[in-house]
Length: 119
Image 1 (cartoon, rainbow, N blue to C red):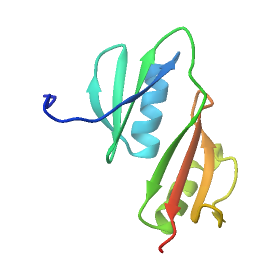
Image 2: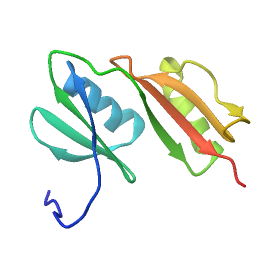
Image 3: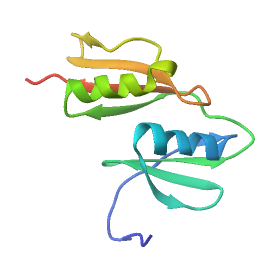
Image 4: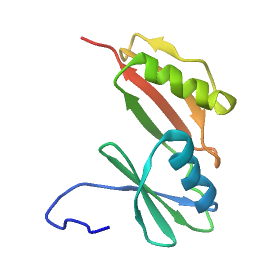
């Protein structure tokens, strides 16, 4: 992959003890693509979001990775695919005007799948 050094952006990195298992989870179960493989670090892409995992002795499991979708139906589809690791069924959250559910990745990181209500 050739990186355009004229383009700006950002990447969030997480330490992992299980780089292959974790990156495969996001690639195969969530639908991310591999943006760059640096050996000990893998950078994944989900639409306009870049995030990476680097093989380390510790695990970063604070914070949350949120994936948003253009429809409630897409959130429901993700729930069906990830029901075994979800923490709740999808539901409305009037405070933030979203429809969402939470799950955990293979190392226990919080992940959220959501749809923003139409205005």
